[in-house]
Image (cartoon, rainbow, N blue to C red; front, side, top):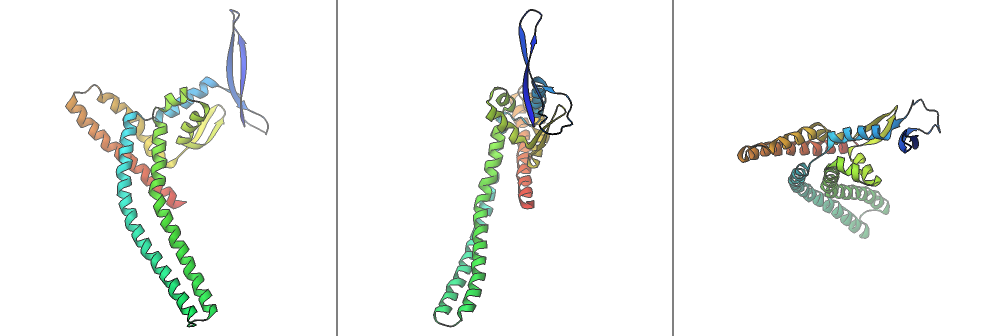
Length: 246
């Protein structure tokens, strides 16, 4: 329920300056006081983005970490799917045997109906679990990968991008964007907290690395790479925990 309003201010020299202010629409009862200038709002946004922003190097490392994690999980997924295939085959065989018994009159139609309904439910559940397992790795990989890409050079994207790109950057950080009494409030995505905690520090360390001698720089970068791999792994674990909780 926030609106933007442009106001003009005449200058002493005869020109006119235009300023944009954001304030409550007053379409509903509202306790908010005053308004916030567009510049103040942008300052708050850039301060927020500075916490999450990634460099191209961090994005490159992040994708490499994602690929390694995905390979590990694909092996685990394949093992699980093999068991799921066996489970589906077993239930399907039970249904086939039940049909044979019914055709030869070994069981009554009522018994056939009762047992077939049970086995059909088991089969459906097993097939749903199989489909979920197949999608799991791809889903988290795409979510995290897209988020890391969006947060790379986030300040520049927000400054130069169209409205839709600005929205994507903010949505990558969190949900429930609220402007209250001139302060921007965003509920951050919980699984992104490891990036929130380490991104700015990692950028600062990478900036220091540039001036180091080659050998020291390589050793320092390798240490940073391991740290960032751990961060991405924490992100992956957090997504799993939230998905399991839901």
